[in-house]
Image 1 (cartoon, rainbow, N blue to C red):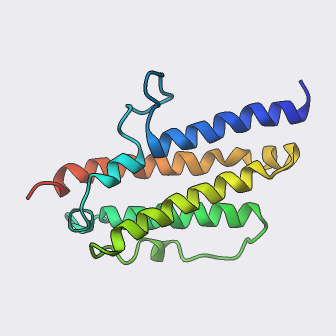
Image 2: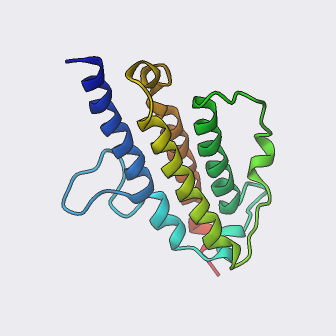
Length: 159
């Protein structure tokens, strides 16, 4: 198999794993690790801005996790493209609340950042794709925050 074929095969797997992380499993198909309706998108769409803004015992709100995931996706794309400047990772969780008008916009920004990362990794040569690890770390990072959100969510949805 040629390097390009290997890259294309692995890229398809990476993009599908990232898709599953956001969307959950496809109807009628198995999944790599999520239940069918437990992706980032469906999890977050089930919450109001007020619920997503709640904090418990000093832990980050769901909004904070979403802001951080968006930041992480953008920084991953920028890093791959050569911008290795320092970032304020702690600040990426702020502000930890949103209004009802801001919530859907924040979710749209998250989706746009995902699409940009896919565009960036799809543009890489086989060698660069391998050097960047196919952005697998970004998907693992998203999975961690999805789990954290789903843990907080059970408390956030209670009146």
